[in-house]
Image (tube, rainbow, N blue to C red; front, side, top):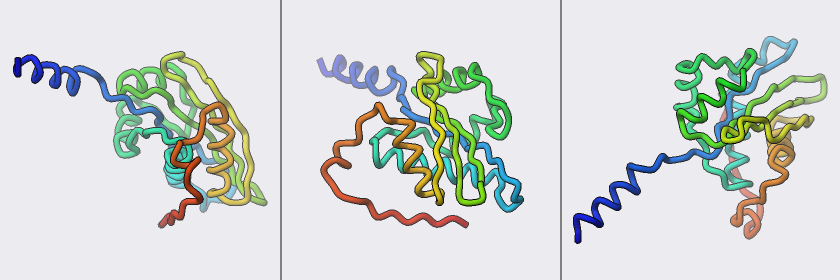
Length: 169
């Protein structure tokens, strides 16, 4: 009898893939100012991912693993990214959805154009174009717009504002 229970536990732990709900790819950066580089796109993606996790409660695919996967699957977020590559990445790594976008520095702030790609449906399920004065405001506005049809996390609905500090080097 105990062998059956052990077998069931092993199957549950190792037989089922562990799904990461959302992967946020580094953003393509467009700016005439050379001080804004590809690293800004990567840092902004992390900012959006944290906002998404706090506000919507989604689990996230690791940025460290994602960086390695982008190289392995020959995906360059600073170039053109084909949907079939996103599909292969998502299925290989058990990712449900992939967010990708372009971040542009304007005279008065920042603009972002982003899409949410659903791996199971093999199509873009949401798009947004947003503008804000700061990257922090932009991340919040973009997340709310792109995930408009998804409810907020129950913990966000019960609690007040979060205090978060970001250190960008």
